[in-house]
Image (cartoon, rainbow, N blue to C red; front, top):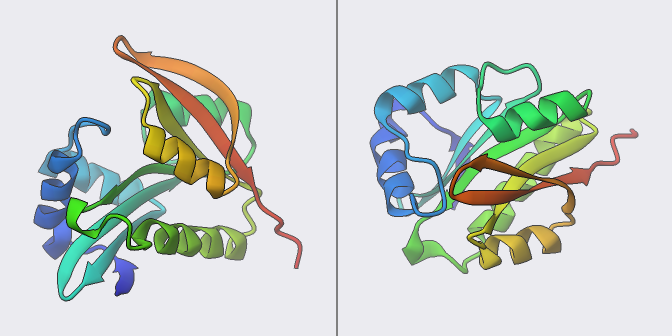
Length: 164
């Protein structure tokens, strides 16, 4: 397993993974992914046997990104790293890839001395696996939002100890 920065050569595989999980994510096309790549703080992939098995997108406060969830955090907090999406291929779920990606995010956030990591999880309709995973990772709910007509999200934060 290798965690690394994504390159344009990875975009097709990332789009395929996103499409397979679109029921719990926002749709994404090539133009959208290229726009995300231009403003993301982290665009990381997990490679397993030369195959893209997972990816993660995260933004810093101030990024050019118009998600209502991201904008909510922008209004509430002075600094943060916002995890926009994490996608793990169905064939690789349960193998710890999400935990490895989050370890990578935590290390980078702490190195940048960021005070917190923010994200949202669907609660209507519920994404029970994601809620459980994020609870185990130490995230706590700080609000709720109905960004679209058909869903409600739990806005969650994990505070980081950034002291040297």
